Length: 112
Image 1 (cartoon, helix red, strand yellow):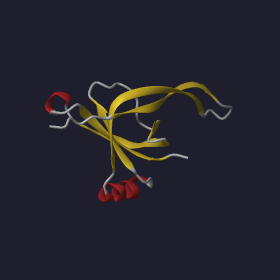
Image 2 (tube, rainbow, N blue to C red):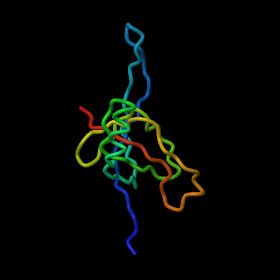
Image 3 (cartoon, rainbow, N blue to C red):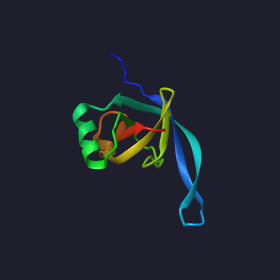
C-alpha cells in the first residue's frame, strides 16, 4: 500500500506593522515552511463556482495537515516554483472524525 504524502510549501504569513498616511495597513511577510501539504489541481466545476462567486480563478486546492495553526486566508504560498495566493474560505472537517492527516482545504490562484 502506498502512503499519501504531501510536499513542503512556503507560507508567507502577514503581520500588520504600521499604517500608511491613508490609514491602509502595512504588512511584514514572514516565510514559514509547512510540511506535508497536499496539492491537487482544482476540478472544473470548483473553478467555475469560485470564478462566479469571487471573480478569482482557483488553480490548485491545498490540504493542510491537522493541528496546523497558521493563518492561511489571503496569504501567499510558494510551491512548484511558483507563487500563489490563498482565496476564499476553507473547507474544514472535525479533526478526530477525519481518518487521514489533513482536515482543511483551501483554493489558491496564480499570484503576480
